[in-house]
Image 1 (cartoon, rainbow, N blue to C red):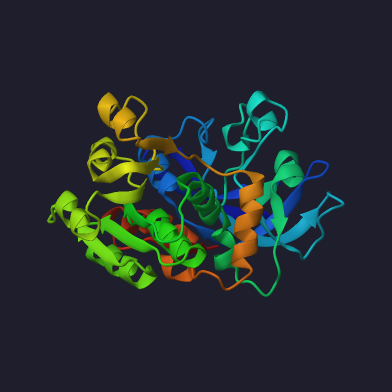
Image 2 (tube, rainbow, N blue to C red):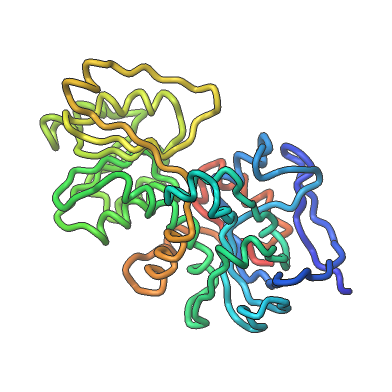
Length: 342
């Protein structure tokens, strides 16, 4: 069988571009030629420190967000030539959380890894639950954005954003920019406050629809937000994953408001919460994590329309062999998302 090229993860800050031999497909599996893979924040975290759930052994396949074309199939539901995206997980649909319709919390999530390659085998768990076709009229880059949009759509619903809300989005990387676009597309007369520090990201936030853009390094955020709304923001989406920002959000929310702690912090992180504020000010704190098949399908449906522009969040295109350079562009803030072309 022919060889293919892939980027393998050997450990923190150790990526190697190698040739691998094709493996035979098992029953109900499909082989996909990757047309576009996208970089994401999880790739950065994994590159620097590994990942306990995604990286099970070394060396490991690397990457999770892609779109491509089926080039071999042993699954009767999928044919050669069809365009597909595969989510990076599949729920078991049997555990406590799956039965509660919270599949993103599945106790037995099956992970798919290896999008930074010329091809990938989609295992049975994914083909059964989370492999989706998309029309040939849609670009691979747009289709590959499905997972990012799906996690944001779940987060959007958890934040319970209403028409005329004042929404503060703290953190304006790919996730924050996606939230800005969703808010503007799905709600009316909404006011968006975006918070970041990178000049490039702040400009993208403005172009994405943010009404106000503040720099947390320069601006008095509480004072600036109170100029817009006397009592603070109606809703806040925290998209940095930094404990000090989690803490600061409590100062920026109005009584009766809601904070969605979307950005994941290191495992042992803690913040302090005033019981007075939580009770007497009726502040709601929530979180949202990952995606599930329902939101993957919702995201793909939106991407098949012209409702939102996600292409502006993909700021660079690079070759597979240059993946490490792409990740460093993201770390520096010069890139938001990079399309990796095999």
